[in-house]
Image 1 (cartoon, rainbow, N blue to C red):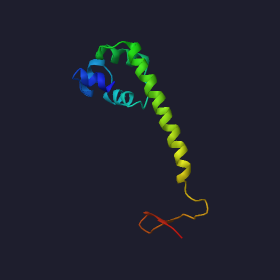
Image 2: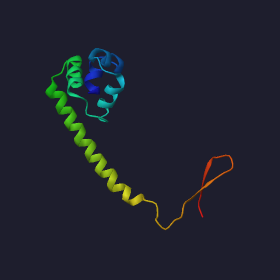
Image 3: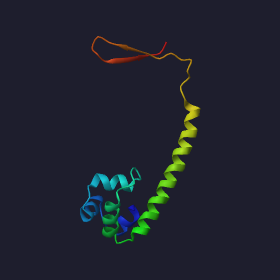
Image 4: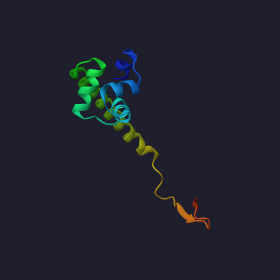
Length: 103
């Protein structure tokens, strides 16, 4: 979506205003953080001058890439878990600030 937006010379604010949706919603859709409602996607496609089918294909490709990334990230985190044998103690200081101590 960013490529279509930049090709058209549109900023996020301009596209959001043209589509009649909130900039924050557009940002989350563009970053594949949320899929977006159908009415918002129709408005975005119209404002970009692309078909809804093209926009839907872009969403599917992005969601598949995000799923692959998350699967790799989940597999990699198994190597970096904290040792269950280590004791982590949290103590309260007199100034109500928390301190983490490592025995």
